[in-house]
Image (tube, rainbow, N blue to C red; front, side):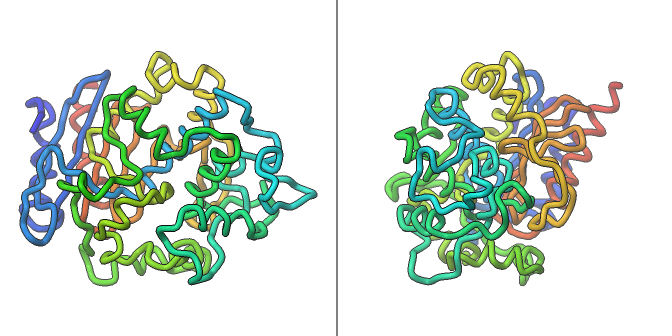
Length: 359
């Protein structure tokens, strides 16, 4: 544990969740100005009882989407990919609306119209090439650029398809570069021999997934390809070794907090990698309106939710990470117990109360 006396109440709040069983296994980390000001972990990595420790990693679902976007933006920085030319400039096999061609910007801000894989059992969850081909061959469900729908499962395969078309590093390959640049642990696919210390996801309440499947849009997005919410599948070596970037990032709380402590800075590592223009595009709204998947008004940048004085991203089940402009801190909360974000919110409320006490 790494916590100053000032933030001891935040650590206590987290450990209370562990003690009463609300948190079965997880961690949180808070950073400010490059320093860890609060960090704690607790519970177990699985029902077998292995204690969660500082090195434990876990799948964080959509909290990994910003790193998918970063892979795309770095390819734009390096060329010849652009944000606003038609995708078919580089990917001729991409099926599109001729009257309103899809751009990379539309994919990154969730308006491409390809927000769900076609319903089929013919392509495996683990077949990245097949899934890229499947989404490329499908017609947009809505006119590209017209409707906001988070690309819950398709985001990573769309980006990987574009990256492959221009010969740029894949999302998984770019994550390796980011690990070195930022000093973090981001993994889209881990070989079986390196899978020790990965927490096993489990339901924190019966029917946990029902709250995420209440609409036809959500069911289309999360039930195809089959297995995305099957906890036995997500615990398998095959899944953990596969790269499914929209939901498959395996990481830890400190890595996510480190990213958010850096990404907002004009003098940060991410800013230096992207350059001024693309860094600004990552941080400012690019699509604003009602998101049919999220079921609320959102402001999407090219990879982040940026409304309300915060920039960040959460994943279904409870993992999330963000930077708060109001309180000037970065925080991540990761968990293996799938239900909702109430645990992260409870700890964050205490963190912000500690920060506000000095105002």
